[in-house]
Length: 260
Image 1 (cartoon, rainbow, N blue to C red):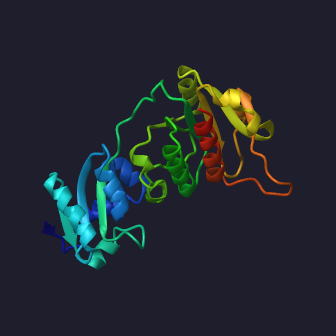
Image 2: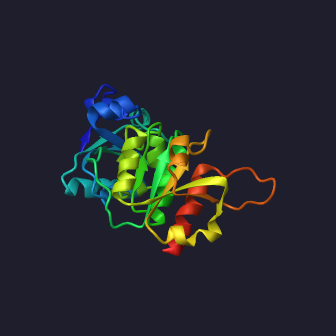
Image 3: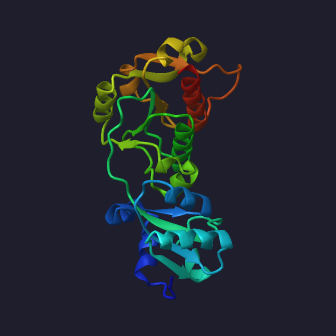
């Protein structure tokens, strides 16, 4: 295990650059922080490039670092003050991994429920959607234009490991996302206050379908409303505000899970 003492070390510069989308794009890498997330990364198919550990990290973090070294992943030790310069969280537990951005994937045609994020711009909301989608057995997630970067450190933290396992496709425009839905022969379901009560939508949910999740500010865009197979509503008590998009997504995903 090599010790880093200079703030200008190339690996520290790389780690700091991963806080920006530009930096992630240039290096084709992203940052994973924290004992639990780093442990999830080790168990995934991600290509791990190197790890950084605080000299004052606890025993569990050093045990994970030893495992990484056994697998041929370089681990660099650094003083607490230097580790703080790369960390995007106050509770990183003194360990971080730099991983390669995954190669593009194609969604399997054998799935039952898929989801599309339509302009979900908040990294925390996107991460929570990814977390819920993976937990509820969603077969794949499509990111439309205007979405947050799934490898933003906040998204990575909010996804709680789901990002490392859930098939994810980024699209540059709505037509590209629509072509994927059509290729998979999916019913396109959008949410609307005047839509069919989800408790009466079992026939739609029994067939392969795509939940379209609208942006925090504007809801589902006109592009998807006009192309929807059906509009579905979540019942709420009178006077209640609309649900946060990540909360609503969790309800939708589990309804699909239970109906399947």
